[in-house]
Amino acid sequence: MENPSFPGVFQLVLMAEGALFSCRDLYVTNNGRFYRQNCGLDQVPRDIPAPALQVRLSDNKITSLPAGVFRNLSQCTELVLDKNNISIVSKKAFIGLKNLAKLSLLENNILTIQEDTFTEQVSLKFLHLSHNSLSVIKSRSLAGLENLEHLFLASNRIKEIETGSLTGLRNLRTCRLIRNKLSVIKVGMFNNLSKCLILELQSNNISIIEKEAFRGTESLKQLKLTYNKISVICQETFAGLTNMRTLHVSFNEISLIEPGSFADLKIVDQLYFSKSELSVIQPGIFYNLPRCKYLNLAGNFIAAVENDSFRNMSSLTTLYLNHNKISVIKKHSFAGLQGLKCLYLSENRISVIENGSFSVLENIEFLDLYANSLSVIQPGTFNHLFHCRELRLDKNNISVIDDEAFNQLYSVGRITLHHNRLTSLTANHFINMPRPLEVILSSQNPRPAERIWNCSSLCWLKHEQEQETVVFGRGWPKQHPLCDGDRDWESLQCEQRGKTGTSSTKTGFDILEVECEASWRHCQSWSHCAGWFAFETCIGLCLTEKIQLFRENAILCA
Picture 1: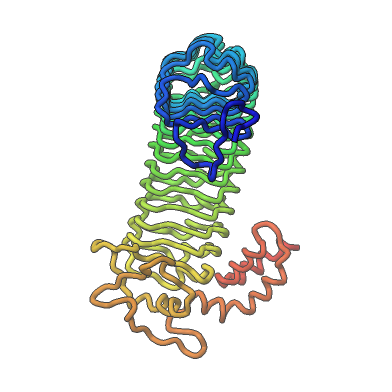
Picture 2 (picture 1 turned 180 degrees about the horizontal axis):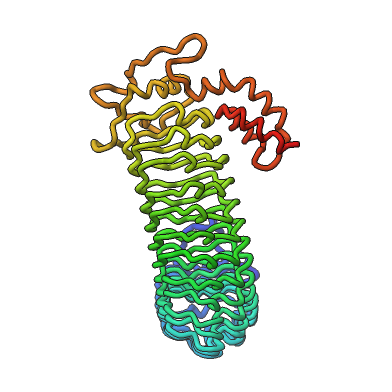
């Protein structure tokens, strides 16, 4: 059947969008598509119908785009020439493509874009030149593209972007320069990109960012500088980025962040500074980030977190400090982080936690201290962590846990203690934790060197397991304690519980059921209290049998 829109051309009826066609046929649908992909073509076909709106010639062997090769395609809005062998693009190759909105030349071998190549493409919004061999973007290579919104130049060999090259792209939204060879970000390089929202510069050789180099990109919301060679963040490095929301600077060589470097980033949400060479967090670095919610400092060489390092970061909810060299947590290290919910301190060298260090973290839900050097858990270590739901203490050197160390962990539903030096635990350790409680005392695939428990002292835990108030991991196999001698946990014989629901060792369940009934009525009467004496704190006071404390502080609700 002849297609009236394309005289002399026969339309192929498709059964499916992805159907395969013989390259001898011309695939044109009634909405103006012309596809000849993977046909072995070594030049642009001359028989492309003038009314064609969408032309795709990918996966061929085209080597050049001579002048005027598309001069008759004035209605074309999309031209795709991906995965050819194009190395030469004539200065006048795109003459005639006045309505072109998308041009893709991905995965070719283009060496240069001559000046004024795109002067007629005033409607172009999307230009894809990634995976080519470009080395320089000349001052007028992109001239005329005042309506361009997305520019992709990733995976080239670009060493230089001449001053003024991007100045005319006043409507640009996304600029991708990933995996090139840029070494210096110069002042003026991004002038006039006032509408650009995303700038991607990762995986270059950038070692220097000149002061105020990002002036002119006031609307920028996301900046990616990962996998470069940046060593210092100066006060003016990010000057002018008042709308920045996400800043990625991980995998660099940063050893110094000058105080005041983030002065203009007042609404930033996320900061990524992992895998660099920071050794200390100095007070003042993060003072101007009141709306930051996520901060990643993992994988550095941080040996100390000074007092008040994070003050004025009241909105922070997630902080990564894992994979560092921290040995001591100071009392005021986390001052100002009242809103923090997740704190990652795993794989450091922490041996000392000063009393009260975590007290300010009243909203913490997840605390990770995995793989450190803790040996003793003192009373008060986890005070005021009323909302903490999961606590990781596995793979330390813990041999002693004070009976009152966990007294204020009223919300913990999962606690991991395997790979320590503990051999016994008492019911008092978990007396205030809600049930059901998940306790991990051994790994899923225990090794011969894993610590053996004195299971005869854990009968209280056996009873709780039988009542299903305690579980040993929710996966398979169950992570119950490894018993000393020839005993097996499952066959461990313990004194049976009496009819009253008590045993020789009281469990948290017993305390809740037997001893808190009267005080619970008091708690309910004060359920309207505000501040620290809130309803859930009231429950905690009941469970810890601190009835006197409850009465003494009742005046707070008056």
